[in-house]
Image (cartoon, rainbow, N blue to C red; front, side, top):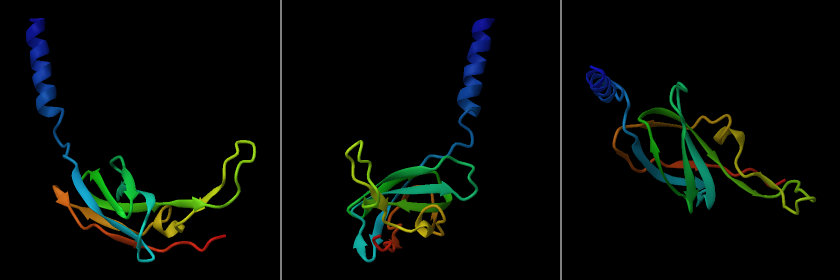
Length: 131
């Protein structure tokens, strides 16, 4: 009897447990800063309704590829450069934001991610002046 209940429970979990779970889509493209490829940074796709976990990946030489759940997304791009105040005790140099808040914390960038491959999801951003 217990074996039958366990088998039914396993079948229900296998059948119903994955219902509504979408396979991630592959999103790729380029990030240009003032017309030049972003050498090093991160791109983050956040669900427009914040209902699903964000997906993030590196941007290297202006290119990125990230696995993202389909749907409308707010896009944040982050990058830093040497500058700012360092930590003398740790012997490390400081870093400062390379891009303004309009491309990350207060981003207006968006993407409508479709199931499957999404190639050519490109973004153009502007660099902050050095401090």
